[in-house]
Length: 101
Ligand SMILES: Cc1cc2nc3c(=O)[nH]c(=O)nc-3n(C[C@H](O)[C@H](O)[C@H](O)COP(=O)(O)OP(=O)(O)OC[C@H]3O[C@@H](n4cnc5c(N)ncnc54)[C@H](O)[C@@H]3O)c2cc1C
Image 1: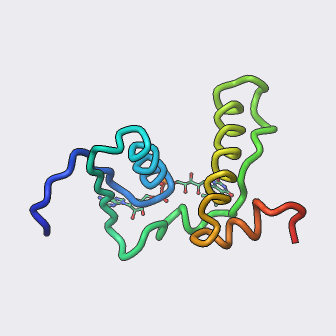
Image 2: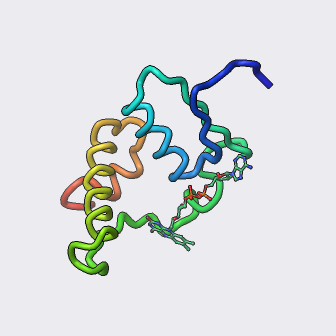
Image 3: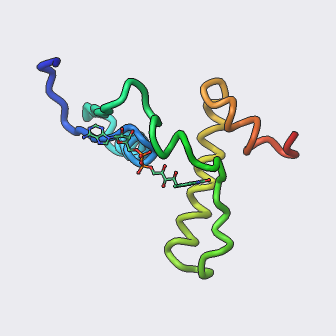
């Protein structure tokens, strides 16, 4: 185990941990962030084994926190994938390119 020190440590490399670390890196770029993942790779559990749907939020009460965050999240995810196509080819091909193949 390295003896390096970090300002922020996020435990768990699923979508929640990775998204949290990513957002923190934008918000406090001068801080060092470490993501600890117990498996050999990230997204080894639920994140890598879900239905692969980017939810639209249409089934939430209009204007509710869930609905607003769902729509914002979808928009942000599409932008994120567009900016990093080379790393997220699967997402780009299946969810963000219109019309879908
Ligand atoms: C059947 C099913 C289908 C779904 N389909 C969709 C869908 O289509 N679209 C959608 O948006 N959502 C979907 N979801 C929900 C979505 O998959 C989950 O909400 C999301 O993946 C949860 O992410 P997470 O980061 O909280 O958990 P996880 O992906 O489980 O990540 C937690 C990580 O923490 C690590 N960890 C745990 N303990 C430790 C420790 N002590 N030290 C270090 N690391 C640790 C684990 O190894 C794991 O990698 C679905 C859920 C299910 C059950």
